[in-house]
Length: 283
Ligand code: AMP
Ligand code: ZN
Ligand code: FE
Ligand code: FE
Image (tube, rainbow, N blue to C red; front, top):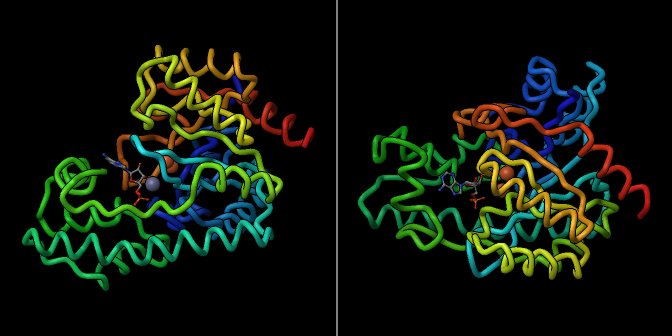
């Protein structure tokens, strides 16, 4: 079976592999297509596309936007976005500014909690990529304040945690509209992170997003068990959304997630790519 991975991160955001390294790895693990979907930036796409072209691997430009939502975390993926879209780049600049303003606030809270953490070392960790909480978590591990990235999130950085600071300034409506305006296909990422287990409630939320222009649902995902994957596939079918999938590979930032394989045996059929192309071509 031909497989793909449509959700990955590079050093342009909080992944640890450069775009070139990621594309090389995609070939090594036998993927037929890959999308780079960094958080709130398109900075890794050109390097990824160029390397993919050199080695003859199918590349899908993507992005992952964080949006505000009362419960859990809502992220929207955009596939085949035109990086040159002025609206997209101005929205990304706004979100990036919100990130830049948020990081010192998180470090300030951690200092109040007794940890000696400062922006220059965080910037060095991120090497020019969009800084996110996983960078802060890695710094906390490096300096011995927590044992693992997971512990950093569980004790301090998760939504509602003592060092949490919100950053989402985009509404789901704006994010979906921006992706559509840029010629892209908007997809709801990892539905499990909405922390809504009731199937009817979940379908209701997704149905509302569809009214706003959503076109796909990330059904195959590292944190989805078989039952939840089946639920997502049935919701996608009922709401006529494209079923997509990705591992959310972050390299060393999430060492338990393997490219194209998730936590073990994830398999994302290449037909997901064909389905995304079909709805894009109908736009
Ligand atoms: P940020 O962009 O700063 O909001 O951070 C988002 C990133 O943090 C995403 O890559 C998430 O997968 C990661 N993340 C969120 N919650 C956790 C958690 N509990 N443990 C590990 N990583 C997490
Ligand atoms: Zn991330
Ligand atoms: Fe995400
Ligand atoms: Fe992601």
